[in-house]
Image 1 (cartoon, helix red, strand yellow):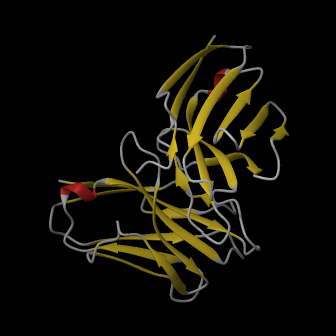
Image 2 (spheres, rainbow over the protein chains, first blue to last red):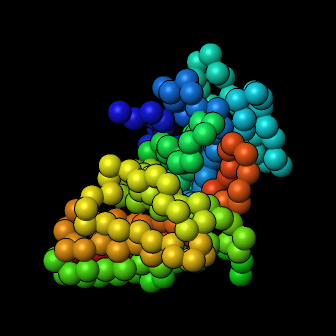
Length: 112
Length: 115
């Protein structure tokens, strides 16, 4: 039972344009959501998070949007840079639980 | 470097052998987690410690797996009688104590290959 889903295995974007990565979840008990970035042979690096009491959180070039009614979140990167090329994972957790539940990841490639 | 560290970074072993991995969390982080990641998948939760107490274990953690955090600082994950299906990246993460939610900070992982 995949509670967090990233339906796009890969995404290719031109440098300077906006990258939009999507994530869907099924468990309505989730109330905290995170995005991680992963380079090959490295551990996931935390990017940005959002609590369910908000619908948007922004940090520099990164913005996360949360649509609770649709159980959907997205990560916007603008402008996209070559160094953004990596695998991006969304993750979710719920109050009182410690574990993060991850999606399968989306490989983002930024083309010059 | 004050991040999460893991050793070794790579381990190649033969089926049936025992292996042990070590994780040193960020200083003063009292919560420590182990995850496993296989190719094409996101990390999957294995187990979690608060200080030295192991508070949750996933069903993925079979009897061949054991984790310890004896002094509430570093942790070890041991796999006995390894199988080829154990080949994966084993990730450790830590987080400071906080009410409710928290961001987990990951180490670089240990890649295990079972031949």
